[in-house]
Image 1 (tube, rainbow, N blue to C red):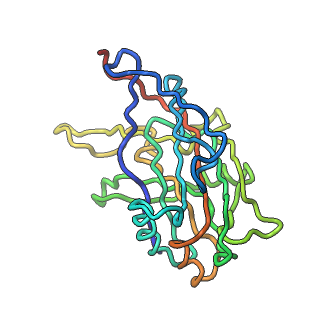
Image 2 (cartoon, rainbow, N blue to C red):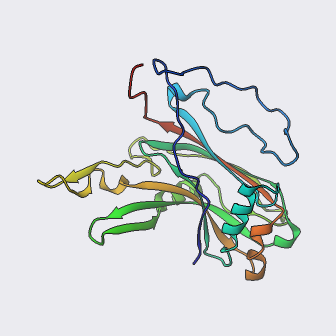
Length: 247
């Protein structure tokens, strides 16, 4: 199984009040695309960051422009070749959770007809017994998507019953922690060495938003890297991080 990571590392630097260099970062809405093929929404939202509302987004557009970033994306996607492969898009920040997820397939590639992808989430965590990182599929998140009626999306010519735009409202059960919530707190031994995740243990680590390849002929799936489709994913986050300094 291929595991293709398109994650670009790092964290956004948010200048909050009382921090040097803080200024309003509102930008005008883009009601029409700036260039052909631009995303349908302006989606790194900092407008409400002081309330904890931010966006994660990813434009899976492997054949939009002849730029270094698109060449890098195409090179990574060449490893996608079969049903069961996954394309990792972004990491959910710790101490945050997803409130909603939006996906839109704006363009399709006839050469990929019959190829479908499904949003998924994977938890990556440190296995203290094995001494390395481990991946598990976040089945609770998958159940949330199923409850919200979100399934697979076509990359090729859609069939009459296919869904090409969808939104899922998440984390609606107040009696449990949201499946997308994680933390990085550890239990340490007398020497100060981490030995386990602190409670809630099942939420230790990080969650990765991904697309699973769930249908399609292998010869078509191998063409995803150079596909003419445009898929845009955006998620609304509620975060619990704030300013760590004054001045």
